[in-house]
Length: 358
Ligand SMILES: *Cc1c(COP(=O)(O)O)cnc(C)c1O
Image 1 (cartoon, helix red, strand yellow):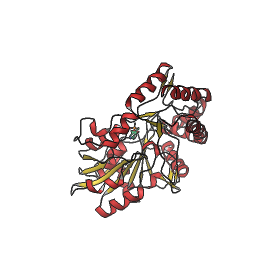
Image 2 (cartoon, rainbow, N blue to C red):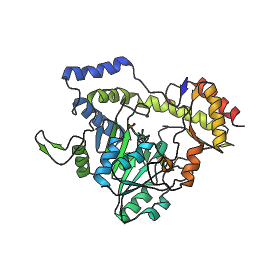
Image 3 (cartoon, rainbow, N blue to C red):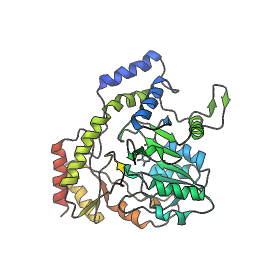
Image 4 (spheres, helix red, strand yellow):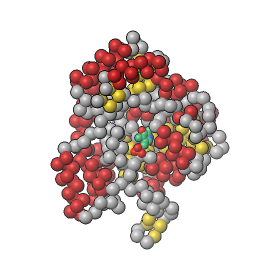
């Protein structure tokens, strides 16, 4: 069986070796040495300045919204994983959808200003499939209207835009280290802050508000990454160049061998060093998608409809049509892409796809 992704598991001995340090320290959570080492290693790997590791990739969205959006209206994309919208609603903010760009699939920055009201406090946009939003235009709009910017960069691991880590854009960027993501700690995540004060606020918010054992800066919650999670990250990080190399080869095979007469692929924004995180293709119609999906499924190949349905249609938000997002969501399919997917399997996937699309 071939799924859309397959979790990368490092050699077990390597994981054991790092886990042994947690046993030796007799310390498995509360920001022990492994979490701190993973933070240091990620800062140098990603070339970025401020990170707080978290126990998953959703709670950093919640913390960032709590701290920056303060219950206001949040302008957001309808084309993302449900966590993006759910975090806004969960934090008692109001999502205000703005449609997406038809080729980049990120929020259409030219439509943001018309959605701003006197209740708008923040923009929460997703660098979907690791493709950067128009960060410069969004920054200019936020400045003009005094809004905060949060990026859901769950797919952004290792992406640079204009040679700067994608996590350096916006007030806060978040990432997910879930087992299905490019780099993972089983469950896990991170938040990246644009300045020291904000990092401090995110930091105490993720640790019950603690200021030392007996004092509190303010209200907080528990979002800490454990030592056991950090051990997985520390084991996987040295494998990233090999993982990326293999993914790049698969992407290049798809790019040259898929019959793109009846299909479209995502356009990666110029000046981007991309991370080969997903391989979405967009069909002419939902019928074609279902036809191809069925042919692949028959051969035990299971691509996924990331992201369907369009988030403005899921029922816990105000309904408003988002024509481009709804069009894309009904027609987009992510093909299998992971380190360890064999050349033979990639060829089979392409052959079935090209044969079934006619
Ligand atoms: C995976 C994902 C999340 C949630 O991350 P978890 O680590 O699973 O909590 C949020 N946003 C997007 C766009 C995602 O793909």
